[in-house]
Length: 132
Image 1: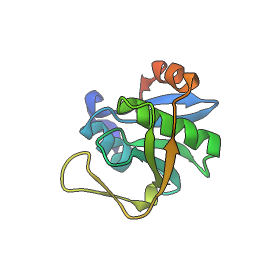
Image 2: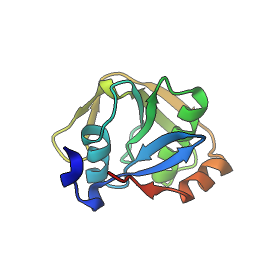
Image 3: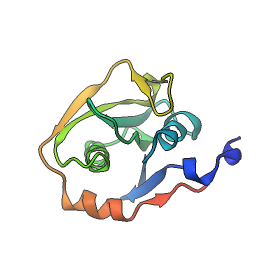
Image 4: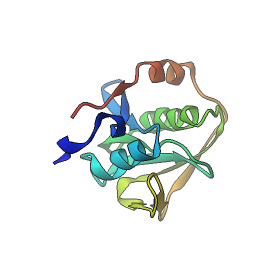
């Protein structure tokens, strides 16, 4: 039961055309998002490649290319980037590391983004804490 989680470890979410995209802003929020919340192994998980940053999750099976693109842009924005490489994989490929916020990803694809859309910047402004 996840009701013992304190509010500061709860991640954030945005509603993108009816699909929830969740993200953490701290190591503990990332852990909660990836390993404690009710997420399916088939949900899409994203993280900026090669640096620290948000764990981002599209909370649905078979996310569309458009949803993955938006989630990747959110991952970049949360690392204060406007271009870069984002790892994309399914939740089933992500394992918990030895320290809070560390994720070990076995296989993934790389999405290269040259820019971030105004839509992503606006969407991020609407982010709210996940309610249990």
